[in-house]
Length: 252
Image 1 (tube, rainbow, N blue to C red):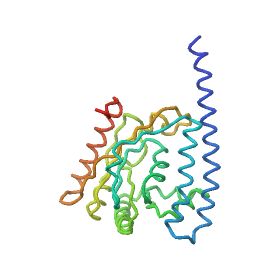
Image 2: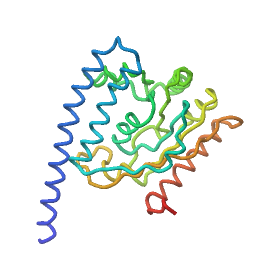
Image 3: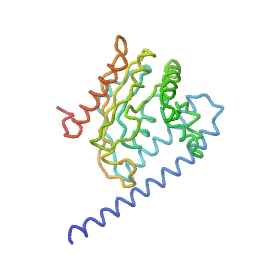
Image 4: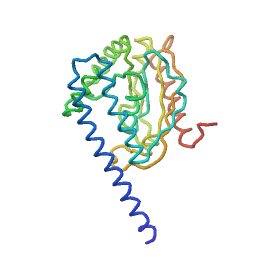
């Protein structure tokens, strides 16, 4: 009975904090998306910087309302040239973070997101690579073709190699798209491991306080490597780093 009484206020507190964050996120989405849509005639970089107001606000708002902060490791590996970013995907948080922290990124995402009023319309103006997940091989070809174009224009490409958000401790098969794109474009791969699902779980409304660990790995040069070899190297580094994050041995 004592445990139940102590748990109820805690759960209510987390619910109210999560609700407050969600209200701010919805409001900021409508406001910033509208601004991005109205700026469709502006140069792309200006439009992109305007859209970053949304991600910066929500990262800070999440810290204030839900007490979720983050710690970065390996930032010295982030280059000053276009790369293919291949990252673990456990939560919505990393979409906010990558958008505000890294240079302009082309997202590989499902095309249905572009149909969402305001959000999707603004997203379309940021030059994503929107694919039909049911298209199979043609979707992969689209990612490669458009991805090479984006990289040649100086826009980074972000790929979640497992294809969707996964729960902490879960591991799915890594797709070959990122490896193929790196080889075709001649750009390196920047691997990223993170544990966002421990604080903002997939499909979960309640957000739990804590410090997210985001680890950038050394670049994997695409020269002289096959897509399969590059994908295997990336997967090995990400999953081994995830193990280190889980046991708290990053500083060793």
